[in-house]
Every structure is written in C-alpha cells, then in structure tokens.
Image (cartoon, rainbow, N blue to C red; front, side, top):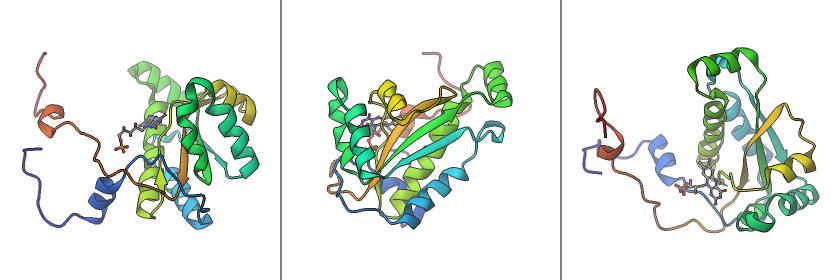
Length: 193
Ligand SMILES: Cc1cc2nc3c(=O)[nH]c(=O)nc-3n(C[C@H](O)[C@H](O)[C@H](O)COP(=O)(O)O)c2cc1C
C-alpha cells in the first residue's frame, strides 16, 4: 500500500480487522456460551436489504452431530475442509429466500440481496469472534446436498456457508496477500479497461 493512511496507533477496530485470519487449526477447548451468543447477537444486529433479516443460523455444538455433519459435509472432494470439525462449534449459515419484498427489490435491481445480507451478518460473527479471542473460517467448500439432508433443512432455506468457531491452535504467520488500495479504489469514476 503506498497511499498514506493515518499512521497513529491502530484503533481497537483496526486491530481486529488487521488481526483476523481464517483459522484452519482449532483446539478442542469448548467456547463459552456468552461468547457464542455475543457472536450470534452481532449477526442479529447486522443491516440487511429492506431490513429483511433473511439469515438463519444453525449452531451445531453437539459432538455426535458435529461428527456426523463433518463426515457428511467434508467427504470425497471436500475432504480438505475436514479441519473445520476440530472446532467445538460449526455454524451453518442459511438464507430464507422467499421473503417477497426482499426478493422483489433484488430482482428489480438484479442483485441477489440475500447474498449480501448473509455476507454482512456472517462477517459480523467473524469480527465479534476475533474481538473475543475466538477464531473462525468462512467455508464454502463442502457438500451442500448432504448437509441439507443430515440437518433436514427445508427447501425454503438456502445453505450459504458453514463456519467453524473455536480457539485457534495455530494462527498462520504469513499475511495473506491483498491488493494495494490503488488497484481496488478509483475516485470519481473508473477506467474502461
Ligand atoms: C465466502 C467464502 C468462502 C470461503 N470458503 C473457504 C473454504 O471452503 N475453505 C477454506 O479453507 N477457506 C475458505 N475461505 C477463506 C478464504 O480462503 C480466506 O478468507 C482468504 O484466503 C484470505 O485469507 P484470510 O481470511 O486469512 O485473510 C472462504 C472465504 C470466504 C469469504
């Protein structure tokens, strides 16, 4: 990044944003109920198109069910995602897609607003977790069909993502590369190419 950003001591929020990583190694240590609830509460308060709040969250914290979920979700081509099963909690993020006003606005604008909504709510969980010393990882690589079947998720809910929540066994040292601000921001317009 070459553009100057304020160089003062990072604010608490900046520390959270800069410190967050996708964690792929978890301790078996259970997470405190209050911390889990704080994460879910952060999601509950997220903004959404038309205040539609289309999100639903399944908390899988029963060890037996979590094991069966992991076996279903992370087998075959998805086996690289097995690390998520180490976490004491796996969240399944759903969107209720039948909400009319929400759906209509999105169709008119040609934007699937529920995708934005779940993204925002999910990231509220991630950032709240980070503040509380917990680790998470967004997951889109798993067997959606088997997850739906195992958890008997009705069709009116679209499965959007899963997210392990727990304490990190290991945090990656290397910072994942990010594009420079100049590459992703233009002022007052954007080039044709
Ligand atoms: C929608 C979404 C889906 C993702 N799916 C996976 C996944 O299935 N498995 C995985 O290991 N990481 C997954 N990630 C994590 C990304 O790989 C990660 O955010 C990216 O490499 C940047 O690293 P960082 O989160 O540590 O900054 C996903 C992230 C997002 C936002």
